[in-house]
Image 1 (cartoon, rainbow, N blue to C red):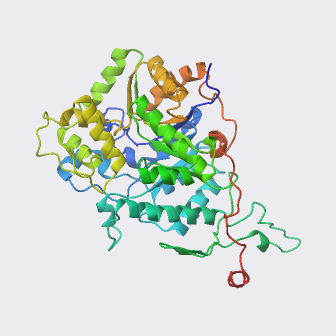
Image 2: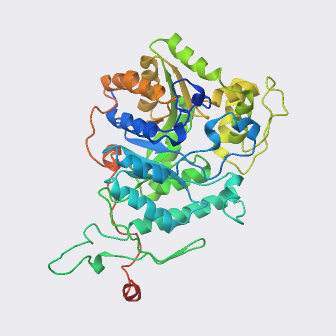
Image 3: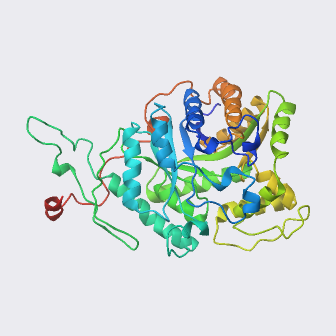
Length: 456
């Protein structure tokens, strides 16, 4: 019996494409990271294809640790600040969701809440915040005398951070702004509440200066798959982006995360699991393999080692033979879930260092598929139906070609099987994802007090 659910699909925007050598392909604009016309074309293509959302990753440091390697890749600079870019893209799109990554480590809750609420309002209720914690020490160097956070300390800050943001997004009732010219009443003070938050990391009075959007407030997304990350997601997230390469791993993660929801008074449909997938599509297996090999052939070993070091917790593997066995790695304070994934991959498939970096050069540890539209649709359907995912964050290997291939070849096959929409059924990101519209009240907070009202 066919699954009654519909797949949710995100379009994960890397300007030239997700393969680390994509910028060297003939159809990639040389200035893809800062070419607004190119980025707008990606957004419009994804919207025409009825994707649920467009997703931007981000970091707040140029990757300067190994310039000999990084001079050969476009990854050392991420381009536009994501909220600025999504604000621009909101003016050339009407329906697709707009999700940006912003870390809790080097930001303050009030500023973040205000910026995302602004994007949500100006886009008509299409914003989402991908909550991450920072692990790159180069980022700390850009924010003064900031000590590196231990893994649990980063998540302790993140736990309180998201509570403050959600509270600020609950500052106003939907009908708080009367704008009644006849009576001279712009808003109703009884429909306003201050947060009065006092915690370990933050003291935030509130209220927020931005009204609620048509979807209530931005969708909360999370990308961590560590134990602390999964607990935070089970309590606060509405979408989780994750990386699992096998069906067994995907089903285990899905069951684990969904199984935590009841402890927080949440139902299974309140959290969507959307793993990343890197699809190289060809009209034949040979064509798909040829496209993939064209990318792999442009991968310089220095770039592969730098990429591997980054995803293996910052460890330098250049002293080991490329075609020798993958070494044992000590645990670091870097991204633990991705490091574990890479080590498990190397052990499971008995890979050399070169084979490991070649294996992650496109998908960065995510699920990689190379094949025909029918084969890729088969794989996506199996993982979806067998409860390994509620949908997927699609990582085109090249842009524009890789996105066009997925839209023109794979989506028609998914639609033929009744797995993906033909048209949007609503206007907000929550509409697309089937998520309930949240109420405005910040749980457990009283209305704005007389002292605050007088000072407002």
